[in-house]
Image 1 (cartoon, one colour):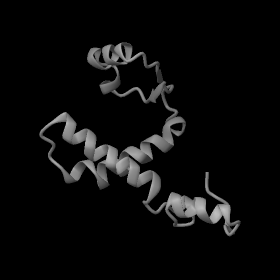
Image 2: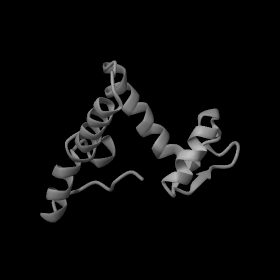
Image 3: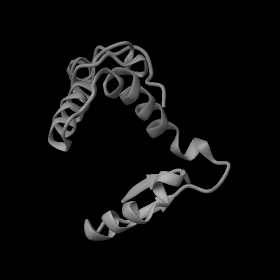
Length: 106
Protein backbone atom coordinates (compact mmCIF):
# COMPACT_ATOMS: atom_id res chain seq x y z
CA UNK A 1 0.00 0.00 0.00
CA UNK A 2 1.07 3.55 -0.70
CA UNK A 3 -0.56 6.54 1.00
CA UNK A 4 -0.39 9.96 -0.65
CA UNK A 5 -2.04 13.32 -0.52
CA UNK A 6 -4.40 14.31 -3.33
CA UNK A 7 -1.77 16.01 -5.46
CA UNK A 8 -2.24 15.92 -9.22
CA UNK A 9 0.82 13.72 -9.70
CA UNK A 10 -1.05 10.94 -7.89
CA UNK A 11 -4.17 11.28 -10.04
CA UNK A 12 -2.39 10.72 -13.33
CA UNK A 13 -3.28 7.79 -15.54
CA UNK A 14 0.37 6.70 -15.67
CA UNK A 15 0.65 6.59 -11.87
CA UNK A 16 -2.60 4.64 -11.55
CA UNK A 17 -1.54 2.16 -14.23
CA UNK A 18 1.83 1.64 -12.55
CA UNK A 19 0.16 0.98 -9.19
CA UNK A 20 -2.11 -1.57 -10.85
CA UNK A 21 0.73 -3.29 -12.69
CA UNK A 22 2.75 -3.55 -9.46
CA UNK A 23 -0.34 -4.61 -7.49
CA UNK A 24 0.06 -1.65 -5.12
CA UNK A 25 -3.02 -0.35 -3.38
CA UNK A 26 -3.15 3.44 -3.52
CA UNK A 27 -4.78 5.24 -0.59
CA UNK A 28 -5.34 9.00 -0.64
CA UNK A 29 -5.60 10.97 2.57
CA UNK A 30 -8.78 13.05 2.88
CA UNK A 31 -8.81 16.75 1.98
CA UNK A 32 -7.55 19.11 4.66
CA UNK A 33 -5.83 16.38 6.71
CA UNK A 34 -2.10 16.94 6.13
CA UNK A 35 -1.39 15.57 9.60
CA UNK A 36 -2.27 12.11 8.27
CA UNK A 37 0.76 12.38 6.00
CA UNK A 38 3.07 14.51 8.14
CA UNK A 39 5.96 12.06 8.48
CA UNK A 40 6.15 11.29 4.79
CA UNK A 41 5.84 15.00 3.88
CA UNK A 42 8.77 15.75 6.20
CA UNK A 43 10.78 12.91 4.65
CA UNK A 44 10.02 14.15 1.12
CA UNK A 45 11.25 17.61 2.09
CA UNK A 46 14.49 16.14 3.45
CA UNK A 47 14.89 13.87 0.42
CA UNK A 48 14.52 16.87 -1.89
CA UNK A 49 16.88 19.15 0.07
CA UNK A 50 19.61 16.64 0.94
CA UNK A 51 19.56 14.35 -2.08
CA UNK A 52 17.49 15.11 -5.18
CA UNK A 53 18.44 18.77 -5.52
CA UNK A 54 22.14 17.86 -5.61
CA UNK A 55 21.96 15.83 -8.83
CA UNK A 56 20.87 15.94 -12.44
CA UNK A 57 20.05 12.33 -13.20
CA UNK A 58 20.61 10.97 -16.69
CA UNK A 59 18.94 7.60 -16.22
CA UNK A 60 16.38 5.94 -14.00
CA UNK A 61 19.06 3.49 -12.82
CA UNK A 62 21.26 6.38 -11.70
CA UNK A 63 18.40 8.02 -9.80
CA UNK A 64 17.39 4.71 -8.23
CA UNK A 65 20.94 4.09 -6.97
CA UNK A 66 21.35 7.59 -5.51
CA UNK A 67 17.95 7.56 -3.82
CA UNK A 68 18.46 4.02 -2.50
CA UNK A 69 21.82 5.01 -1.03
CA UNK A 70 20.26 8.11 0.56
CA UNK A 71 17.43 6.09 2.11
CA UNK A 72 19.98 3.67 3.57
CA UNK A 73 21.97 6.63 4.94
CA UNK A 74 18.78 8.24 6.30
CA UNK A 75 17.65 5.04 8.03
CA UNK A 76 21.04 4.08 9.47
CA UNK A 77 23.48 6.98 9.75
CA UNK A 78 21.79 10.39 9.50
CA UNK A 79 21.33 12.22 12.79
CA UNK A 80 17.67 12.68 13.77
CA UNK A 81 16.48 15.24 16.30
CA UNK A 82 13.65 12.92 17.33
CA UNK A 83 16.27 10.35 18.38
CA UNK A 84 18.14 12.66 20.77
CA UNK A 85 20.35 13.85 17.89
CA UNK A 86 21.68 10.35 17.29
CA UNK A 87 21.72 8.24 14.18
CA UNK A 88 19.24 5.35 14.15
CA UNK A 89 22.14 2.88 14.51
CA UNK A 90 23.53 4.76 17.53
CA UNK A 91 20.06 5.05 19.03
CA UNK A 92 19.43 1.32 18.70
CA UNK A 93 22.80 0.49 20.23
CA UNK A 94 22.23 2.82 23.18
CA UNK A 95 18.73 1.42 23.61
CA UNK A 96 20.19 -2.06 23.86
CA UNK A 97 22.51 -0.79 26.57
CA UNK A 98 19.61 0.99 28.36
CA UNK A 99 21.36 4.37 28.21
CA UNK A 100 18.68 6.52 26.61
CA UNK A 101 17.41 9.12 29.05
CA UNK A 102 14.96 11.18 27.01
CA UNK A 103 11.69 10.01 25.55
CA UNK A 104 11.44 9.90 21.79
CA UNK A 105 9.27 12.48 20.02
CA UNK A 106 6.50 10.84 18.05
